[in-house]
Image 1: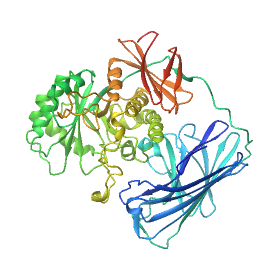
Image 2 (image 1 turned 135 degrees about the horizontal axis):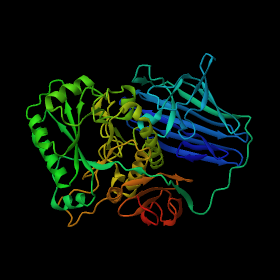
Image 3 (image 1 turned 90 degrees about the vertical axis):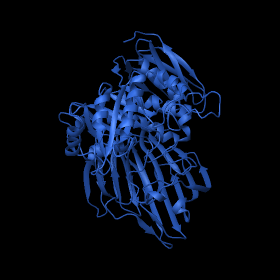
Image 4 (image 1 turned 60 degrees about the horizontal axis):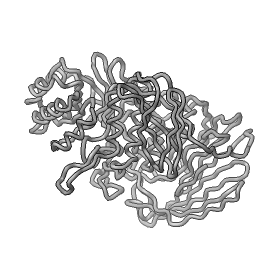
Length: 569
């Protein structure tokens, strides 16, 4: 297992990951996860056993809440994570306590026996198709097969339940407290004790020494059977482009622009026309999300859409008071704005909303939803791990989208807004930047994430269009021209989009160490290329084999674009 600042990660048995993460969470009244400050940490590693003791303090509403943890591992493979917390001032919480993440890979469909607080048991399984609702309820313990034996988790101090985290693109299932059916937010008072524990035990499992750490190049298998790449575009911001900004965007060869237009705004006509003009200028198509309320009137929108029809590839209604726009609402607006346009339906939120409210897609052209990797966690490791879930979502979405094409976007590093905030005024950012802006946007990290996200979404061949990041600005592919500097460089993510848009096909890849080195392999008229990513802080080598044969050297946290020999498709 790995230990990182209060978190237990990647618990493995005989090379198989059996737990992804154990950690402590505080989510405030807006469901925003707030960071902990680790105040002390002692690690006693005895080789065949260990003990970690730490103390931590909360932030924001929970700044007066302090907790200690004892994390122990014994020579028979037993792992215990126990916490004891209290506060000196009252505060509100939606969730407070231990969470356990179960890995996605290899667990879909795996049998699991759930023990309930009254001692009864239920034989179930980790969901294969992404479950819209909690698969396991009233959890006191859970047991599942591993390596010829059984792993068992026992929970104490709270009642737990499990949700399918893949709904929000997390690469896991999550077992958490307190049950979501109970009222929230709840007040934590001085004198309240938050005492919880989770214990992992192994039954009938032969304990062996860990496999030696592999040396040499990371092996990446490149599949011989390519899939067609989706149209790759960007989300259009309202501000116009300078000539230099336009030149940089044109060089990307974007397949489309994705624009949001508020039909209640006085300049809705101009926004539609402006978006269409910019799409024409880039020789790109236009996808339009039209935002409405029950009181909205179309005014000049029909005329604007008629004038832009030559460049519009898709259009859908986003009702501000509905997580998934009702078909009756979509049809009403379709008849008012132009029934011959390529209409779609869906959500401005996450896949989970589609999963919980499957839309009626009959006779429509598109189904749409958005993606970001930080609904629940923001650390580098979790964000990169979550790219693997996008292939699972892309495999699952056809049961909801029917015969329509599927658009995924906006695709952003951070959530664009908090759809679950009960007190938006108090939902301030955890950092000095706005809550929707990630400091990593301008770095190679965003380029690496974009490459792996595109690979995941493209792997099953079910996604037709992906809108990756904003065009420009702090969430985009380039800083805005502000006159402060003579030249403004594009961000590394723009290199990824340019390479993908030069290609036609993608070859699925499998890395034997995906948290160390991974790759996106593409080909087309410009030849076959690999975007190879070093996710570690030390130099690495990647050995590509299968549909490509190459050894590529990588500096720490490097993103390398390399030409590959081989037939193009």
